[in-house]
Image 1: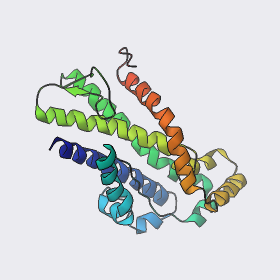
Image 2: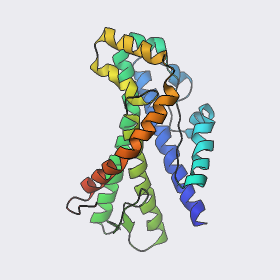
Image 3: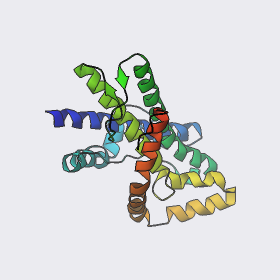
Length: 232
């Protein structure tokens, strides 16, 4: 039963965080001139349109990865007009940035909730840290569940934010690069990106690299959350 409750918590946090990420991509594209995702019903926090678009990445893989490994991985996506992106590479880059920015916002909100909880005596720092245990609660099952939820919101959204910033296709970081290029160079870069078959290799490379960088960055973020405690 404890494993089932833990899995439900993981999935709810994963689904909401992923839905917000993709909805922000879609919203940014709509505001910047590409209505493709809007017309596809993706500018929404309702997870169903996102699940229907990517059922494997939003349902099957997260559940299987949790059953097999005790943590969740998955993906989602929104459609966009590549012709629009080529004509407006800077706007396309902002669209790419909008998803990770949403996850960073959730990290900040989780930090604020934890600090408010500490100020009111509901939460306190744990003796030891794990991915899903960065805050403890005072007595009470409901408060324990709240501490677990806010821990997952912090850690999972930090992971989504940092992982998606890696500048390799098909991650958002590769789409953000045109922000730093001239218009002509950005168009050439996007053409190269669209015609590159390196998507799967890019994901493999990103995952291998990320395994080395996430733990110290997660620890650094926790030490920002708890200044003076010096977790290590």
